[in-house]
Length: 338
Ligand code: SF4
Image (tube, protein in one colour):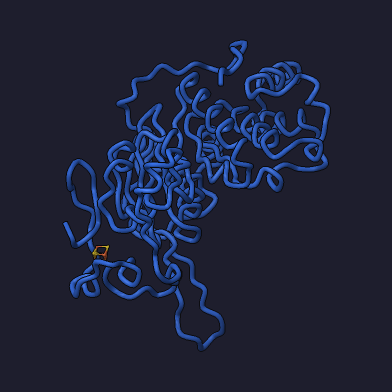
């Protein structure tokens, strides 16, 4: 889908793709869920020792089942949550070391988030124009007239009509509301956007439109995304690199095409085997790997590989030692098979 050409108040960014924008180093986010004074300690390890980088203009797909820690990771990057340990470097600056309110505001202007549920994330009492303008008001950007011009520009940019600014969120479909969320996110001219399952709540027919819009915006403005989804087919088209997450850990990470063509970790293989193929002949040849059992609880997980209880290749060492990410066939995999 072609995005209408914006009138330029948004900056076109032309920095090379090789420049690292965001680096996550050994990030941990644990929640203490102990109930009662004398109860034994219960710790949910939602994100456990996660590291990856995102380059400028790149989309990094993050995929895994619900409850594996993807959204917690995204929320920690944008500083909705404080980390238990580890670092997030944004343009080489430690994000968690930011103490002063002005610097934090500047970071949150550059790093934005699109939420999964476009129904819940828009204030039903505000018009679309007010919703998009709100963050510019808070950050005191330009005059009131400048902001009105910017709102019109953003509305066109996401494929909505100028008169939509006077309407309220309930008057729009799910896909249109996600377009409004995207316009609101772009209002502060961000560089990096955490897209937290932005298409999961939408009809399949609308999902492709939103993916195309996000791709066009990325290419036009040099944006970078962390694109969170629960199945590989959703992240395949938009991502340059993909990380597969299981129970708080990244178990495989690499170039999108490589990971999609030949996943190595047993969990990535199972995820890929469940992706629908449009070709009926290929689909009939495809072997589905069914994962037995539920995703285990992340409360006080046992030592060893977190995937052991569902893995068809489990060995004794898998119960004793946590496999670490290591380079295998051009990507990184955390599995004792390699
Ligand atoms: Fe399976 Fe062992 Fe590899 Fe874990 S480390 S995925 S249990 S083979």
